[in-house]
Length: 615
Image (cartoon, rainbow, N blue to C red; front, side, top):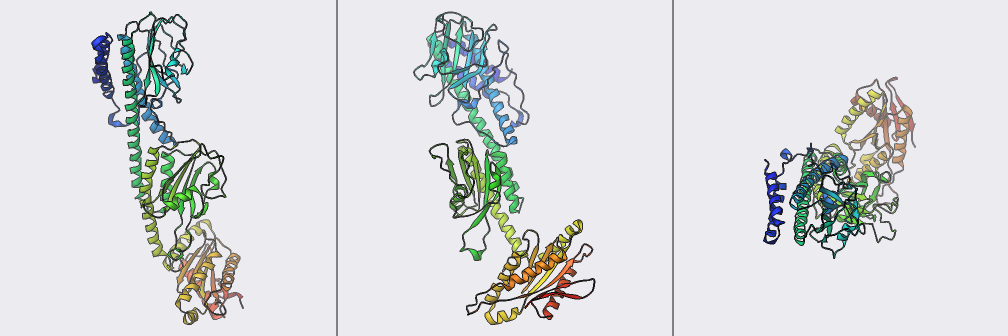
């Protein structure tokens, strides 16, 4: 025989002795302890795993009917209700709570079976527990005579029959010995001739009424004050059983959630990509935290030379209601939104809009966004590797249409996650910055000579697959040596940066390739272009450079020009290094022919064709 069964039998025997009254009443607390120990020794799932929850067979009720409405054990415990948004997380958590409810129901049923046997002339013994509203009770478990027909779908509310008197704070027990006066008992279908009833409320730690134990009988004056006192002890023990079960389950769920967090820590440090960090943050929140709208905000990287400028950022991920209006939305730290405020202060921001707002909308990013008044709670967690940093680089913004949806536990869980994500994000940024230093020109931010050839080889593979052309432009600043000799190298650097910006402004940033090839030379790769498109772009660049003015602290600003050589790489041409050399030869011809012009190199005629010569 299982230890738990032995303990339950001992508890029943002790209760039986206690109901004899007198000095034996002291046995009731001991019986409660035995019942609790019996519950704690119930068989568990091996290893604590919940992937397959065994079905717990209920002891057959006298009527063969199970309660149609099943109160959740969490409803008996204040602040224990939790929602989970993502299906896999919901399934996992629901398995934990299903097991807890099954265990509590089994232990409660065993206690009721014992009470039914030891209380003389008991017809039915019933435990009521609250539904989602604590002012509405339903049957959790019952044990009754084989002839009884219990209305398992009954709901007890205030002013709904005799049992509803237990909602009143001044009523500590019901003890009726003669019910022939017709007092209503709603929990029966067949209205048996109940003549006696004893009932006590179930109280939580704050003395709130969260259910009741009811025992009735077909005999008059079947119960005494001692019976009512004994039920009070039992009610206290059953509440403590529920309370400990809820606390234990919540702790186990928290343990599992932090285990998931530990798994993400491994994922974070297996990647060096900032975009992967964004994706993993999004995935974690989606799987573990409830929301109706979620955004991830990131500050853009800032060039040290632009440290005097205001920091800017954008929304890197968004999901949920009205998410399309926030996708890639840009902002500055001077914007007044609550999410931006969390970044600016590097502090969590929590707001509840359920009451007292007078219809006023508080922006999340800025005043231009669409105003949705359905949201009732907002929580923003900054993501930073240093909690004392002036700014956070990232922030997770969660919104819900339910008030008080985010509990302290969820906020602490997200805080722990944000700390891990912050370190991973800084690490990924440093790695990518190191790659940029190795692959980009420090002055202009453009890719360098080596990276250009890698990019052109990659683009050529794609072009061969899809059969399109690549235009290669090689350009050089005219008379740049005289600029350095006349105005100095600092002005020369300003000129190079200005021209790099002009070139970048005339190409497709997400498609084409631009590099500082060396010194005052630049190379552009125009992806999927035509001969006409290549020359048109080259001319736009040439004119954009001609329009630049550089302040050299003299009466007239400095103006410069560029010479450009062009070569069209068709699908049957495969040597990209030779393509750059061909463009270089065309550039040499442009220089030789008077500068400030575009010349195209063609393999077909082995001639250098002058496209246009500027003034």
